[in-house]
Image (tube, rainbow over all chains, first blue to last red; front, top):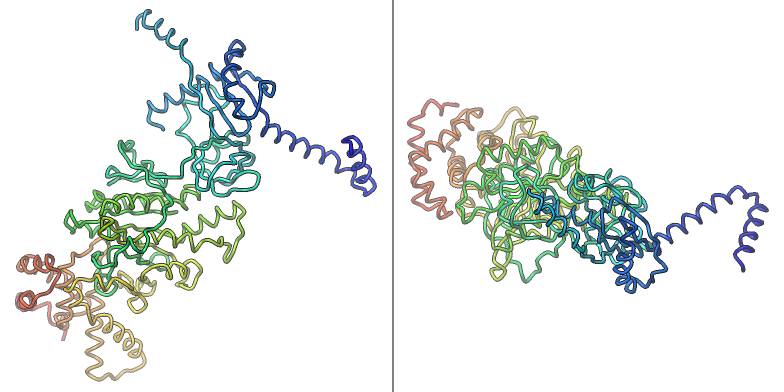
Length: 114
Length: 522
C-alpha cells in the first residue's frame, strides 16, 4: 500500500472510532522515531571553519568505507568551539580530530585529572 | 618569550595534524535518578565503563574548567540500547549527550601507596593527599578462587576482644558476620579488630580495609581519626561510599574494597576487610535495580540479591601455598530491625558466612559491652585456628555463661538458692565482668589469656562484682610489669605451658598479697 493511502486509511479508521484527536500525537511519535533513526544512521561532519571542509572531507573519507557510508551521506555543520580540525559522528562511531579535544586531553594530563 | 619562539610555536601549531581514531559511541536518550538510557553502543558488554562527553558545543575554557571525566557503568543490555548508572554527579549528564565506549571493565587502582589513605569506590583519593603515582588496576568483578586454589582456615586472626577470641574465634580467610540492631557496637567490634592488628609483627600483620557504605561522612571521619590516633592507619585503607554518594557507588564500594584486598592477597599477604554495612549496600542495589526496571522480588529486592552478597563474600578465602598463601578475612556487618534476624538480607548473609556474632540491645543497655550474645553467636571454622593457649583457658567459658544465663533467669523467681547454684551465679557474674571491654581498647592475645586464666581459677571470686573490670586491668598490668617474660612466651609460642601456668599462679598470689584490700567481697 502506498504511504499516502495508508495514512488516509488510518485517519479514516481513527475518525470512525472517534479517536481523530490522536492523529497529531501519532504524527509527533513518528517524527520522534524518524529523528532517532536519523541520529542513529545519519553522519555529521562538524568543522571549526568553512575553509577546513576540503581537508576534513578527504580525511573523513578514510573512515566512511568502514562505516558502510559514502560522502553523499554526510551532513556538514560548523562549530567554532572546535577551534580547528574536524569531527565525524554517527552510526555508533565517533572520530574526533578536533583541536579542542586534543587541547583538553593535554590539559587533563598536565593537571592529573585523567 | 621572544617573538622568534612565538613564531616557531605558531608554525608548529600550523603543522599540527590531529590523530583520529574511531570510537564506539551511543547517545543518551533519557536520564534520571542516576540511571541513563543510551541508544546505540550495540557492541558494549556488561560492567563496561563508558565516558560521557561533556565538552561538545562548549568553549575550550569550559571544557578545561570541567571536573575529571564522568564515567558510567553498563548494567543492562537491552534490545535497542543499554542502561547505565552514572558514577558521579547526575546533573552533569543531559539528553543527547554522546557516550563513548572504553572497552574496559570497571577496575580500581591498587598498590602499597593506598595504605593510610581514604579512597572512594572508584579508587580515587578522597583525603586531599594527592594522586597515586604507581598503581595496578584490579577488576572490580573477579571470579572467586576455586576449590583447588584454596586452603583450610588454620591461622588465627586475633580481634583483641576477649569475648570473640575466646568463644567465637576467627581464622584468616574466614567470613564472620557481625549482626545486630543499630547502636549495639557493631562498628566498634570491627574497628577494634583493625586496631588490634598493631600488636602483630610486621610480617604477620594483615592489611586492613574498612569499607564504609552509606555511612555518615562524620562517622567515617571519626573512624579515620581514631585509627590515625591509634597508629592503625599505617596499615589500613578506607573505601568510602557515604550516604551522599550515588547508589551505584554504594553498591560498588564493597567490590572495590575486595578488589584492592585481592591485590595484596595475590602477593601472599593477609587482608582483613570490614564491610560496614551490607544492609545499606543491598538497599542501594535495590534502588538501582528498580530504576533499571529489573523485576522486584521479596521486599522489592531484585532476584539476584543473594548472588550480590555470595559472590562478594566468596572472594574472601585463604589461598593455597602454590597460590602464595595469602588470605582475605571478611567481617561483614548487617543491621537488623528490632532484633529480627529472620529478615531477608540477614538470613541470606547468615547462610553465606562462616559464623556470626549477634550484638543485642538488651545486653548493651545493661552495660555489657561488647554486647555479644554468646549463646547464639557461632564461629564455624575459627576453632581450628584458635591458639592452644586460648583454647586451654576458654574451653569452658561458653558453657559457664550459658548455665549462668539460665540460672539468672531462674533466680528471678526463686529466693532460696543452694550453695552450688549461688556459687555458679557469682562466678558467672564475674565472668561477664571479665569479658567486658572498653571501646577502642583491644587486648593482645597474651593479656587475654592471662585474664581468662585468672578468671577460670576463681581469682576474681573474692572481688566485688563492680570492681572486677578494674582489678582485672590492674592484674594484667601487674603481669605486664613483673611477668613480662611469661607473657612474651605465651605470645611467641601461642601455648600455655606448665611453666607459664606456674608463673601465672605465682603472679596471682603475689597480686592478691599486694592488693588484699581489693579482695574482700564476702
